[in-house]
Image 1 (tube, rainbow, N blue to C red):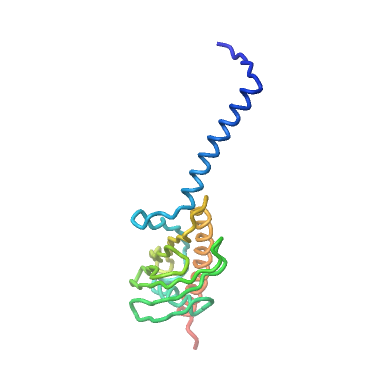
Image 2: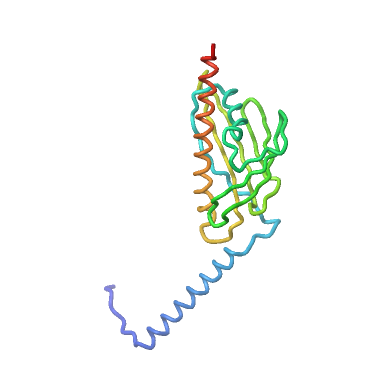
Length: 196
């Protein structure tokens, strides 16, 4: 059947446009209202972690020690409140977060030698979740693959909140991995060539 045009009176076009606009407004309103509404406590699911990986020219035990020493190299907004061989309680100020700005977070870091460090949020003034891990996998005698995974929830209830959060988290993961890689490779070189 060939396409044929249908004559529409101006009043019909206006009515049809108003109806379309009303439907769009209703759909948009329900999306926006549900985006800004906080989920019920029982419905809350922690976010999927964002993961970054890097290969480091160092033995796993040296990489493990470098991870533990990271905050001593550049303390910034990090304060170690207590620590022992198994774990540490850390208070950190995250600055420059999208939309949120600055957030204070208390978290527990657990050391599981020789290949894992986990961290879990205890409390925060703005973050809803901050959990993750460092995982070390030996590739060869002096090459280690390091995975850093972090699940963060800024508590934002706006469109594209997860995408904004994940982009910021991936940027931070890459910076942390680069800092750890520099420190671990420097420690590996010092172990291979001790001062005389």
